[in-house]
Image (cartoon, rainbow, N blue to C red; front, side, top):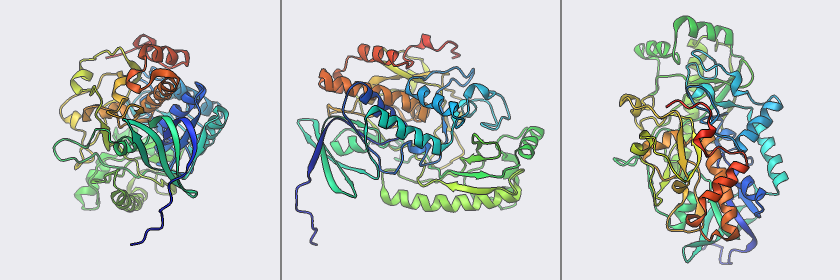
Length: 463
């Protein structure tokens, strides 16, 4: 085989910080680093920012408020984005959503009921604007390829787009891929999936429908005290008309009444780090969407005239790699409400990591384990080893698998991303490597930026 690429990869520029991935951890990382004075390049494989919130159709930022009393536990850039969308009518003010049974953003009080719901097109436009204002260089349709590592430091980041293979020099890297791609290809230590068999929680292909008769749907749910239409699904299963492994219907109103985000499909066996597996998952996901859509129109109250307005262009992946840092956040530590001197944010989300083979089963529920109302996030779980100038905010953090549930959703990713961006700027300005960043100073900078890093700042906490 004669592969025509003998030329050296050109080094086209130099940056203080390169952020790989423009999702809910990469966006605040890039903004925070640039606002702190760093020269920042953001690489994004799609043509828009927002990650799973836009490209994968998960139009709700969860985990930013406590479940029991809907008190904010994440602020900073997360709040900045939410408030901008609310102001222009493209987001739903969470304080206007009653945290009660049978409301259309959750249908049951708890995690889904206190999320931030937004229109994806407006989010995409807003994030473009924020990047331009902050002076972040953004490369769309650009895939991270590899790194040049010398003396346990990343010297260059290699990527590919229409311009071919190119490289940029960098002082710090934020791996916001969600999958720990940069960390893995740099030689960092990681684990993947559950310990017993390496399997990961199911993926989802989101879709949205409109023309839903919401009055009819709400009347049925309230009159029958229905939780996710499970009684209708059980009846269809008994008749042999329900072809899926999952047995609940998760629908959440988009900002516009009568339009719903459908977070129901569950695609088992997908490995989000494997290109062939992702491709198969997309095809299986679209097949599930079309079969589910027909059943919705035939059997679900209020959906008889609905139509699909979009099917996501990428899978919602809940779990892949987790780095192995100096400290691994354990379930025991979380349940003991361990406090950390290096807390850089919090999550208000609960356990949500379905069984890899039983997609409607939450193992923690079966064990009668309930997450604390507020979960602190220590800085140390983002610091990969042994590479010194890479940090990994988001769901690739160093945690026991069960702890991933509260931390993997988008609002905590915003908190981790903002902290990572500020830490990257501190590294550039003399901290040398991420493990030597002055965390007290980092926490102070986060407070100055309006982020919540102290439990006392969460006015009402129920544990």
